[in-house]
Amino acid sequence: PGWIKKLFTDFVSFTVKLVIKSQICKEINNLANILAGFIQERAELFLSDGDIGVDISITASPVLKASYIESHHKGLARLGNATARISDSAFSPALLTESRMLYFWISDQVLGPLVSAAHRDGRFVRHIAGEELQGLFRTNLMAATPDFMSQLLSSESPEAKVWSLSDPQLWTTPQGTFVVERLRESERVGVRGGGHSSVFLAPQEVEVVVRASYADKKLFLDAKPSQVSILKASTWVGNDLKEVSDVDFLKEVVEKIGVPKVVSYLEPGLTALMDSHGLSLFELIDPEVVSQQGYVIVQLDFGFPHHLLVEFLQRTL
Image 1: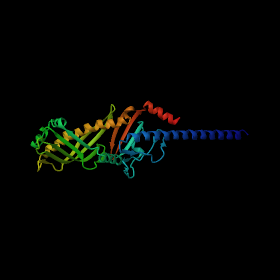
Image 2: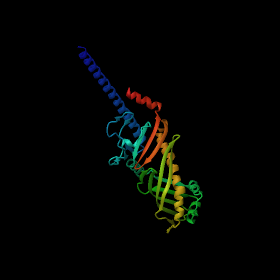
Image 3: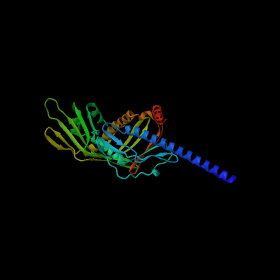
Image 4: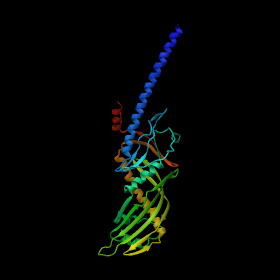
């Protein structure tokens, strides 16, 4: 009968459609896995420098959504053979929109250990000497320059060293990422002719709120001190130790000279590091760094560099 023929034909057609749909979904999922793996390889290279790296291996297979691919990664900072540990993540896909091509959700649990690794690798040490140091103090300051500082700066060989005493602490809010750093500043002058040297020591705790942006293939850091505490300042002249009471001057130096100088090193340094891993080859379209409570979202549209697109297609085909 005709109805049996129609039922059989519809069943076969329905079965074929299911098989074709299943095969297409399978191929799309395979492509999603290949793309996620390719991006992961590039990202791991991008997040490594010397003994510092980040394990961003996936925690589960990428999931193909209606309009995007979602993948979850570990984000464990490494320094040599030591690897950080992260507790349960607070990430939820609802925290992201679907208007951009690429999103990175980065929690403080990732940023904190990465900054600590940089500290322990000796990245937060800086020497400034001679004309460069003297030029910094030509900045107009409200507080009068103390005599001991004038003597240090007017010598032939002034030298300053600033270094981090402990792991920096950070937390992110909608206002930006707050970084608390315990620093030690040492300024030293060696007097020629067998005379005594003069040394100025100023341990300090500095809290800075930082907002990052990226434009014209350069990283920009807007850093504003929110709190400066001079723990104890002293100066050695020969064998005599004297406590320094010019705290207002020292705080102003940190706010108007110290923080901007640190930023002037970090911005080109981090830009050069990212460029060395090929970031400048990408066309990043309207990148945004959005600070929220406990995490940062980096969202952008982008264009693939030709050589990476060719490499990806060679792997896929």
